[in-house]
View 1 (cartoon, rainbow, N blue to C red):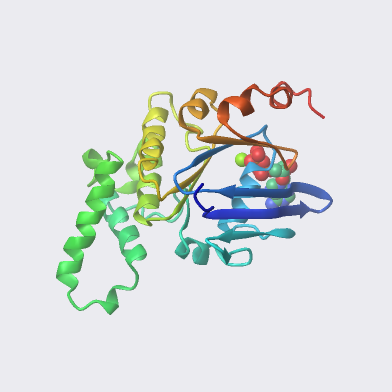
View 2 (cartoon, rainbow, N blue to C red):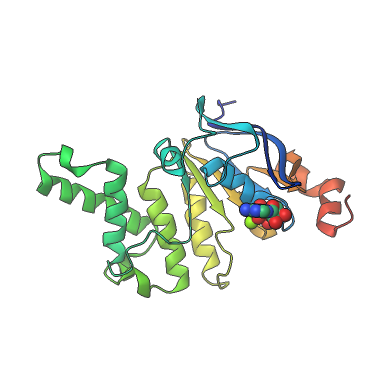
Length: 251
Ligand SMILES: Nc1ncnc2c1ncn2[C@@H]1O[C@H](COP(=O)(O)OP(=O)(O)O)[C@@H](O)[C@H]1O
Ligand SMILES: [Mg+2]
């Protein structure tokens, strides 16, 4: 089995007296897409927030390739290859879709001042940006201002910007939430395509069971902040404990 790229150990966070995530110990490996499921309020987003750095845990650790990320800022974690798709808040609304992607490529490449052939670099950046544009099938809207995109395309742009960061770890928290049925499959196809690269580790919070079945190499179940199950998708989804959680009969 490949070495884990990302690991949590006893990851715990309390909000006042409420334990939102409770001693979650988990390893994630390159080439593996893990779907995280659990009822509303189970702690899925909070777990993600502690991995990407939006929240600091009360206890426990997050490591990537042996580096302790637990207390690092979100941007430092991103430089370590932890990539999380966000609703587009850091977008330049008046710039085109392509320009937004190119800026993300540029940010990934680092400070442009270190390079002394700006023209060649611009061509290279554009070529890379166009690759992500094609990968996310946004060619048709490449020159539209980002702010004018329909919702479905905005979500694709989020994936394009994330791909432009070239992270090792991809994190998606309910990427199809609020999407119409005809757009949701596009974004899920994009995530499925990321699986072709065996060096990538993918974490996906998703409720839709058909999606889970199709994409998951592994499922973990959170319930009341605890890791309730972890393993093969068929086994996990058919276990009595998990059924109880979904039917609301578990403690
Ligand atoms: N910043 C916060 N302050 C207080 N409570 C929070 C905060 N973030 C999340 N919680 C609580 O933590 C629990 C888990 O929430 P969340 O991680 O959003 O669940 P999920 O994503 O699984 O639906 C919930 O009870 C929620 O109210
Ligand atoms: Mg959530």
